[in-house]
Image 1: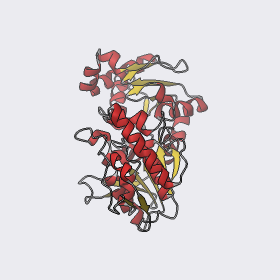
Image 2: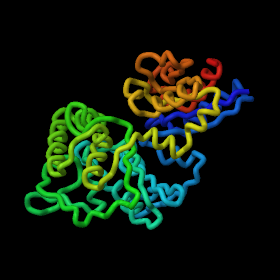
Image 3: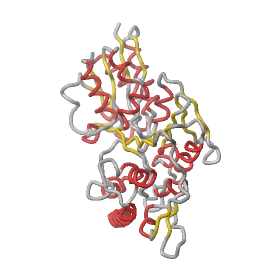
Image 4: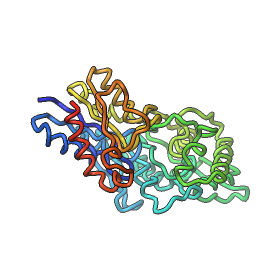
Length: 357
């Protein structure tokens, strides 16, 4: 009997990390029923972070915020730590239609406000992946009490294009962060501005045309000039939300995968395994830059535990240091079928992985 740790990220838009782990496990058990399977759905700060943390051993409590949205909530860990996920309330996958210029983070800010005002909360972790906007977190900061005024002294509107209208910023009504601080869990190292920044790299994925990318870039540059803060790696996360919260709310940027692994005691789980299976919707060069796959591979190699991968699609080959892997597109024959019948092919992937070892 072997002890198998199944720790995937979500397959964005197709299956949550929990659904991915359970389907792989189902396929594996059909081949090797006596193995001890440990399901450890994981996230790096993007979509599904709250679900992954809830699934892990530490006790957590959902704090619902129906004033924001019927199913909106944040997590209270250990009675003093709040975890708030941007993708759950201001994410790309929940937007009815792409809106690169008008999408914003105001609802995310409302959740942050409720967490910050909760007397039990001493620190806040903000999971920033999967955003639909490029507003530098200005929407969230508005919800927290910060004022962004145009040349007439009137509050600007919501959305990335509105940043170009900022003539002054007032933080006199900005709510104070909790005593233990605010930490931004990011899965990218992109700065706010420039050719590798929030607008240039990520806004096209959110529906921006070439012309709109330029407008958003100029708006971000304009906003940053009012903050007095220097751009830095990771500041471009969530359409620049990391920069805005860092500059005006004193938040600190952290590697999302590493912090979530600590919150969920992932390292201990890996040390007790004979094999680790991880993966995500698309395995490409970005997967090895601070995301779930790269961090889990790093932990597995440090523990001397072999690993294999399950992905929706793959660019290139599976790492030579792995036992190999399975791609759903290879199994299904097309991207369309892999997405349409994701659960079916995840189960089949579990079968293939079991035969692999």
